[in-house]
Length: 276
Length: 158
Image (cartoon, rainbow over all chains, first blue to last red; front, side, top):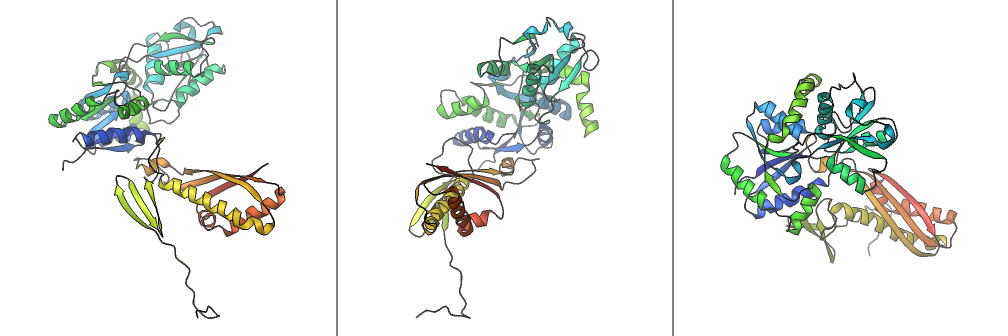
């Protein structure tokens, strides 16, 4: 019997096990045994990937950069969701605020998600920096550090930032495009009261990461099964709806440039090492 | 003739169950002339072919209490027309049950909440007495209350 390929994932909600059970069952039925290993935070999972405890890590964009950093670029992004590609974050303001461009945020309060959220903190702050606005110098940063270590997978911090804008405690906040759409649809956001001030350049989100020495034939075998998952299969659809995708795509690394710029500018990894 | 007079040792009755693994995370339990299927320790899916172990535990506690009411109420002169119990249980940290590395806590039940809906013409005071007696005599309530926070309330409906 082949030993299973071990895939790591960070979980904060036990319902996630349903997603991974569907994936695992399909891989076993296709003759490519795999198992999952769950972690409470990305730092632990990246360490497990680097030390070889797992073969594949379902990495957040920040965890991908951490893996690159920790392996000295000796890793590969092999697959991702269709929805991981070309995401954007919106800077949201109240319609009656009188704020019409980024420069108007000078002297104001900007709310963001957790400090390690690429979409709700790191990338939008980099966009503001590009526009000449430094946090805590040109504007007050109000950060909602909920479930740090989950890299913003838990939308709690992002939602709290939005709530703070709605309560008038902040003048702007950062919201991922998918959340902005969902929150308008479910009534969390009243589009008559809030509007998009600016939008970040597109960036990519999660990917399946392997170390450079992961055997190519194992990777090929695993990817062939992954790409056979299809939205037209009801079992796969259940998983895909929960995980927010219609199709698995090959991995690419061209969409992490702005996050890379942000973490370098902010000395994010150096800061993380110091605080560890 | 068997006799249990003073000085005679008396062993407590033992209930027995036999459980066999069937397939995957499914087992079957046999007890006396009955059997029932158990699907997983606990499930986070919306639907499964059979209840999970945790659901059997909640159901068993509810069944114990419901039966207790039927036994005790007549002795207080109380007639119960209908009774329904809703229960919910919460683990201390369900992520530890899934083996999430880096999580703290334990996978044991932390609390069980229950609401007992009783349709009766008896006074609230009398029903409270019945409920107290049910708790005193319930094997499962008395077992679980030593390990889990049990938070039950009575709702009298006409």
